[in-house]
Length: 421
Length: 82
Image (cartoon, rainbow over all chains, first blue to last red; front, side, top):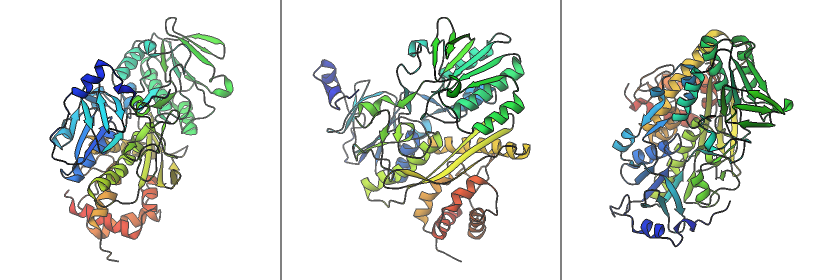
């Protein structure tokens, strides 16, 4: 769907109310203004770095509806019982203390001519540079039989928080010997190893609490991230529990019935006790409303994450179409720092340094059994291009796997401090 | 070997490090890199670059660093207290 970027203003009474609403930051001292939409790994990091490094020279407003942010990364460890929900929740108080104007509201429109963002609460926020980092939304109709009205019966748990708690509660309530089903997403999607780490964590929980239970995964793909590592881990730790059905075996022909609690894979109907549906993904809605998407994602310039559509609008993280980087929290955080440096340079004349990107994704297979995949990237005229990479080997020693898991715990502390202060 | 490190460039480059390493010098699972003297810091990064140290993340991060960038990072992290 294409929406004219002025569409939201329309001619209605709501538009008049929006125009009459006070500016969120109307101190009128002429400082350059950066508005960031979305307070996750991309947006929180960008807001924090611009505020911190500009030392008050730039007004930074962060628009994020949630008062508590639950990280998707490590939410699988919560499902597995390795973390509590409190461990993955973060507030925005430290960012606010650090000079970021944190506004808890939904951005519902962008007028790129007037350079304003409209909020659901009625306010209008003006920007010189706009950074959109809204994460993902789901493609409607991606899984036959599933829509938002079904997400309580069949949670996605792919935006962490209440959905994660729901899926955990359903997992804990599974009958003895019951069936857990997952409908995995097609490429590209947030956190490529995420569904398979989740399968591992569910299997870990079931092995300890419900060892005769089964896991079925219907996958629209013929292969997946860290496949050899996960399949080795599943065979060694959860033998006979996990049935992965890839597209070669009908995993791409799936429908669900949330009332009957059935999953139909290639014509075969299975009764399930828990069903985790992870639909196909697209850029967060505000990127589409801003008119900077092309298809499902927002194409960006690798050098600074500015959109192809508008040099004053930047898109970070999952929503961006940037090239070789996976959609991950680490990637978003990395892109945010390149973007923050470029935006600050453009607004204040500070030095702009070469874009450098990196990503590492750690996954937990079982207790003290961590694996990782990572790469470095550089900006080319065409895209963010991979420079160098690595992946954990199959058959690694228990000591190496334990060190990898411990490293992931250190990273979690590091990145969440880097995001939220 | 004493390259003068560009502190401002070092601060920018360090933002890549602080995705994992903590600015306050605390460490759980990932070592502290704050408050190091220049020489051991530079030596460690060159050892990762040459794959004489065996962490894959650090090997690929160090692999694309120039001598100037390593010097800049060393200068920056030296200024941070443990």
